[in-house]
Length: 112
Image 1: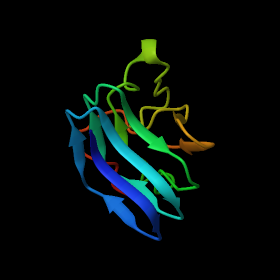
Image 2: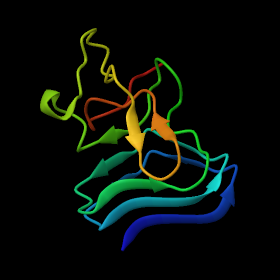
Image 3: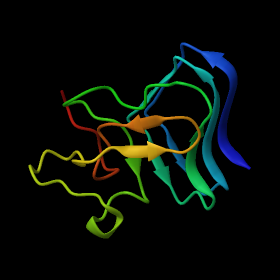
Image 4: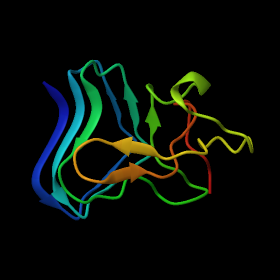
């Protein structure tokens, strides 16, 4: 099961949530939603699936979301400038969506 599902939903903001211990973290089948400053932790089949066109961050330096499968160098997550944001976008399966500013840790977002 999914921690959160949005079908045919548009123009929503999802922020400040921890979505953990599900089969799927979040499944979206809508567009024009903004998803940022959330923690996706220990979702066994995947943290997110997006079948629409959505925005997965709040820009720089505010940042995007924390992804537990993208927070270590061996997963491709590097923070060479030590700003708390991974230097490489996190790809969201489904359509062609990305969290352009994934967070390095779940202990808090970057204060803009």
